[in-house]
Amino acid sequence: MLDAGGGGGKLGFVADTVAKGPGADYVSTQTKFYVEPDEAQRLIDGLKLALEKLIGIRDVSDEIMASGSPGKDVYSGFATMAIRQTAGTDPGGYGWANSKAQEALENTIENIQKALDEYKATDSAAADALKPKD
Image (cartoon, rainbow, N blue to C red; front, side, top):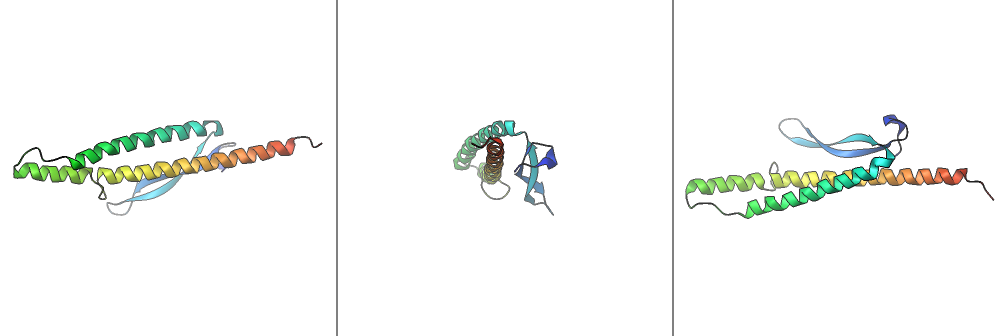
């Protein structure tokens, strides 16, 4: 969407963000950002790169989840369980946080792309309207 509220000629888009909610929980929120139309594609490319890195890091998390105990003693077993829980996909675990971050990036990329497409369509329509008619 083209929105002069953030400054004339800037693209406005909504990004998924996370905020501390009531109690100890985190809640998904949305924050409005503005970017120059000429910089929107660079922003999309950067967010896609961040998404790729998150996916790669997630693979490491999955390897940690599959790792065995370093020893046969009780303490090694409990440590392994704690490590797996921390790396896992239950709320609060790294796998869970990584998944939520991926979703937020994907939504934000989609929102920027929609805003950029709308801007281009509006810009093209305005240019066509100014062309002399035969």
